[in-house]
Amino acid sequence: DVKVTQSSRYLVKRTGEKVFLECVQDMDHENMFWYRQDPGLGLRLIYFSYDVKMKEKGDIPEGYSVSREKKERFSLILESASTNQTSMYLCASIVTNTGELFFGEGSRLTVL
Amino acid sequence: RKEVEQDPGPFNVPEGATVAFNCTYSNSASQSFFWYRQDCRKEPKLLMSVYSSGNEDGRFTAQLNRASQYISLLIRDSKLSDSATYLCVVNPSLGSWGKLQFGAGTQVVVTP
Image 1 (cartoon, rainbow over the protein chains, first blue to last red):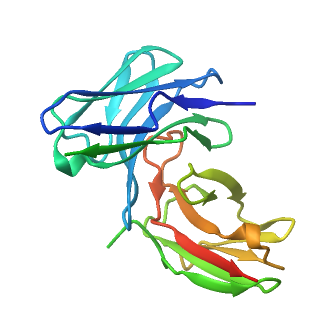
Image 2: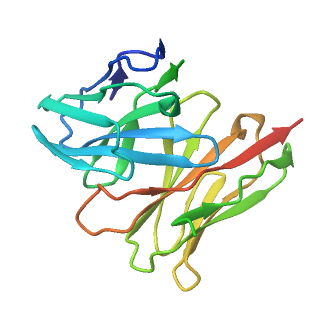
């Protein structure tokens, strides 16, 4: 069974803390994504990676960075968490010949 | 104007009834279209891709109307387990999956 695994389901952090969200996929997919999902706004792309060490900014990259050192792992970093980064974060990888996205279970981050 | 728009609902549907809803998109050059299902507090999962000729998967039928720039999803003989939020996903790019656009979702509630 194909799988995208996110390291933390629920996190509570304080303003200014550094936050790491990790994502691992076991499908050998080249493309991986980090989205955030907020009520009424849908999924918004933070960063996209199309290969190891390659990344592209999405629609809302401000305040975030990413790391893709290995094909299976894509990490999202919040250098200094702020309250407006309280959200659900979803990692995904994609089957490029069909366009099917596989999502992790999500990481619900609360920044106090 | 949002790039992909959906009626947020909720659509309250008696068990056994039919429900249909649309998703409009703004980019006429959009290439591929998908419906995802998201259960409460879960990750989105692919329900079906939407093909130009329309396609059916059991009780679910998806249609694409390029002239009016919308896709639709129809659910026949609704089951309680169909209660979920249905996300519309559009790819405006050919050859790249980095620009996927998501609707905010349509909530469907099937009642006994």
